Length: 209
Image 1: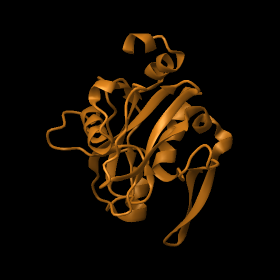
Image 2 (image 1 turned 90 degrees about the vertical axis):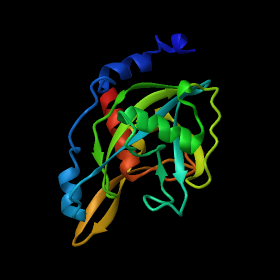
Image 3 (image 1 turned 60 degrees about the vertical axis):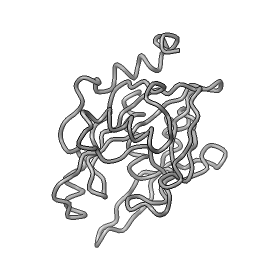
């Protein structure tokens, strides 16, 4: 299966435009100063997420999750599988693979990392490294109900279309900020994709332009 995908145009392009796996990006993220100014965050904890691309008969899909309402960070929001880096995690890649196994029961053997996006600072105080990978279409996602309320796939073509991107206004103290969100019909996404997840997808989109 892996050999069959080596010549896929999308995967070849991703390997060229992403940070390589053996030279993951450093730094807190370009938006870290804003997070400090808005929320008074002093230090950021290391974390990673997996942006998984799944080849389907009708095109590439992106695997997303809906977090349960009971979670401390970003409860009830759409996210990628991921979380804080454990002391035993050698790299952000290990963190992303471990968290995907814990949240969705997808083994690392079915996940093929390609590269990374730039780190991103979040309102919850994490420095998140997004790891891009393709996932074997034969996988079966089994969400852990303690963390994941739903797992679903969205057309990558729809997520790459800038016409589907908009902004929502959020008041932060005396300021009004504009936050990215996707405006997709329920037929394309059953849940709202916005905030950090939308920003990561938009960076991926821009790298592929």
